[in-house]
Image 1 (cartoon, rainbow, N blue to C red):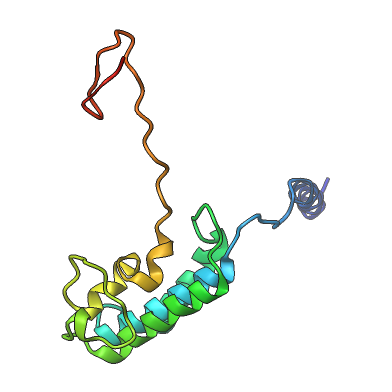
Image 2: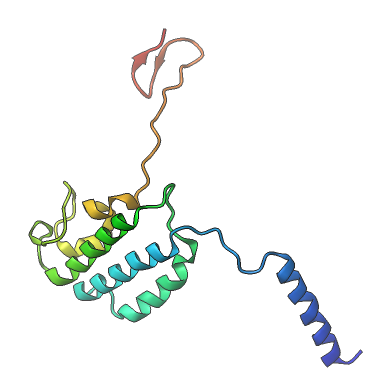
Length: 157
């Protein structure tokens, strides 16, 4: 068999294997929401001087967001819009502006001092708080001896 013919046969076999494997389907949720948020972070990062090339940043997140948002529940369109709007407001505040002085951003009690600190931790502002999934409550587990549960310091009867 000629080398060209062998290559053609291998191409057909590998193409059939890819098609059988499901192709490019994805179950990702919130791909466009992820992109909207990350694109706003890229712009804010550029305005703050922490992102050199906003377009390159957006190209990176265009592909990275194909995984969707890593959240248990999909946020509402309004929540995403409010987050994006606040990230865009960061772009207008300036690199040395205190977070509390940045209009359009509701600062929570946070360790972030400057508006540009939000670029690295958007979940620290009220409008983007949904980016951190709520942890399930911790349920104390009684020990086998019926004594004190060290996690809660409660006596178990």
